Length: 113
Length: 113
Image (cartoon, rainbow over all chains, first blue to last red; front, side, top):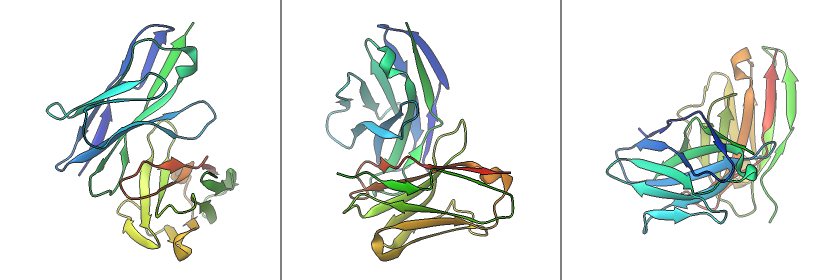
């Protein structure tokens, strides 16, 4: 069975500071990995994904995540955050058969001026 | 492209009553999901359809929850009878294929009193 653990429920950070949101997963089979974001009063939307190939994946708004198979992690990073990055971030995993995308409990990122 | 449509947006019912939620996925998306998101938690998969067949319903409380996807397009999720612990946001999502990222609707917020 798959599971996802997001190690921090809340991360407060000042604007222009770097941030890392941690995600670890467990699975007995090969996986696809995702980060979804939910901005205040909006629905969940895809931020970035790892399916295969380069282990470092990037989003259009400056976030990146690195798939580390040995540590079963997929941490999300941004070198300099903006107020507009305030949102809840969910890590998700599905196995490569395409079944059961499982979500973590979420990390609330709060960017302060 | 039009997004995933869900209705109603909000519903308040008393325990032991029944309720139904409707979802219209993005045109052409073969895979449809229903998730339950309780406040402070990540989305929990209830059921996954591939076209009009069920792929996974292992976490659906089948004594009270039912779902169908007619003609492989729209879907309905029903709860009968509702319990207090069913209070949550019910999210519908669709994807082009089983290994594609999910597109979410805005959800239905259910309150059971």
